[in-house]
Length: 366
Image (cartoon, rainbow, N blue to C red; front, side, top):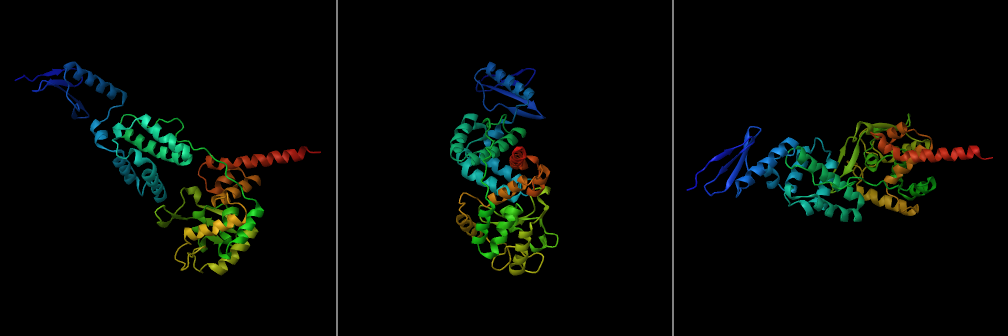
């Protein structure tokens, strides 16, 4: 029977097992770790300990069993669960789960975290980018964020998400509706929905903000509306109201005289007297009109206006462009749009620049 003995070294130790193979062990943070496998030669065991020691010094050590015993799906679902209701809003969680279920987990869900490498990520990312560039950027950002958390928690040593520019999303210039086209669109829809289109364009509201308005948010005397909530619908059909995404989203906006006139008639005809009555209610008034009905209204409006290329959100984009053309500063645009940072508002600065060029040209004309 082979004798057992341990070889001492500066870091860790190597001992010979009864089988004749060698086992390497070391201590870290008060806990003893063993090599995942044994070694046929003592030199190989020492070499493995040297690599582990170097990883510790570089900050690249992790408990190997964590990554080997955890699939990406398990880790991603736990990542979302830990943040649900605190760091993640319900709408963001629904978006993340959709990206995972449709685009990430079919490829990586059953793979162990330690098995995913940069080549696999690239092979997944580029075909998705060719078909759906925006979706690819969003899915890549989510996967990279989850993997970076795994690195920070010492589950994996390095993130496999290393696609240069993978998270970048090209900003596509959206179309702008003209005033005449907007009026044709407004005139084409049932009277109870006309104010919704006007608010989206002239007050630059998102669809969820339009549907989230209540009587108490409107001050006809001041000509203002207070945006304080949104009515959102998740991909699975669940609906709820929530507060603004940031403090900047809670804002007071002012209406043009035409919008105020339209809204005064709308309130008198379609909205209940209580402050909490929805501006665009469903049949029994207990909630805003369902998205499907609202979408059908918008489909007709854009068809009649001759602008089938427009999304409802483009009304907001058009209004912000007009606002910039009227001379709004970046701070003005940030407040009007409810943006928390200058980056989002800066996309409308080109409109202000174009207006400035036009005015200079007129000034110089004979």
